[in-house]
Length: 388
Image (tube, rainbow, N blue to C red):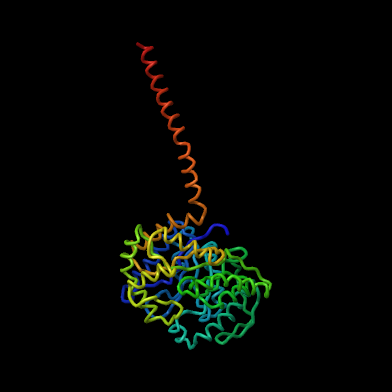
């Protein structure tokens, strides 16, 4: 594998009851911060109910974020494709691709909250079936085909796009996966990337990593496509501070709300809390490999384990959680950029090597420096003596 990219997966998660306008502004400011820190990508979610994940249109959010940033790539993480007319999804992403000059990415999934899909009369099984149907249509449209197709929710008649993407030949497209083979199967069928949201959040997700790419390769062979590990993204929650004690103190700000959301509100059985209270959750997070609440060294260790367990992937995405207050959250991302990412991007080792080389020859160079000083001192004294 080449350079491992680093980014963020921002659903986002916010404690209910706070000012949503200000929370959305903090999300935009976080994306700006990640851009300045040279993170590679950020993925924005789509949710419509339950009160915590408050971005209803990742495309609109991306349009706003794109005007505030310079280089970071911006993905829908994910567009709940089962909820939408696939023609308009493809059309909106092509528009964003032009507006961002090739910085947009499309992530798709069936929709994670049953409270979302129930409002439009769909159950989770129907959403998964629609995902496959609609993804087939989106891929065909983006490849320039004219499509006539009827799904459970929409009827397309000789549908086609009026614009080609700005990106050549196509912007990145990924399918979300948790622990089941659904995501890898669809990604392999179409030769797309995989966004493993549940890579660490359950033991099954971590254990399944080694098999997911095999499923993708098997389906790619069956359908005559090509899959690439570089287009595989893994999501993991982390909060990093200078010390483990500081990190644990920081997450008392919001970890409880995060536990309550997945344990009592969101019908999303893949994410286990690992315990009933905060102390248990902190311990479970670090000891199970579910994530990291600790130091840059602990984060480096977990990323290394993920690389080994998976066989290699392209992007490490830090899940946006609001575990800590905004200042501590920004500091966590700074530490990841400064002390974690360089170890997996080929930037750290050359500096260690340079320091080692300099250390080995320091004594001889030090003697030469003293000799040079003595020489110039004597030369100056000789000049003074000559003038006298």
